[in-house]
Length: 110
Image (cartoon, rainbow, N blue to C red; front, side):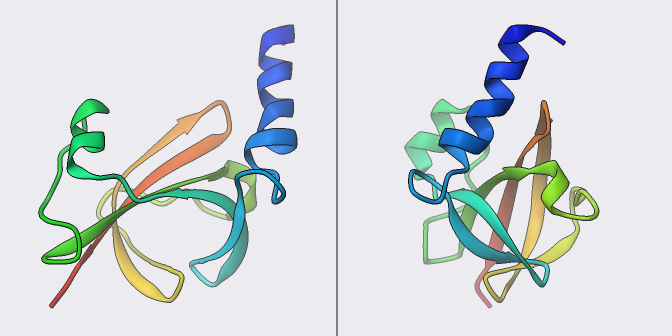
């Protein structure tokens, strides 16, 4: 494995997923996990090349959760319904970047 990849994996734990820096504990499908949560705006999602499905807090809410793959038993698939902090949310996408998952979730208000 390259030294660069080793440095990235060390940064996952020591910086990005450090509870004293960026990460917080959240409930993901009944498990308490350490993760970083983003709630992007329409402009932010456009800049990332992602679809925006409505106005925040009017029709729904989009949340992106970043966590280590090894912290959850099974990687969620597109369309699956999971619970995040007690709310049922649909998985829009799940990207695995060297063991770091970026899971885009969507919640529709009734």
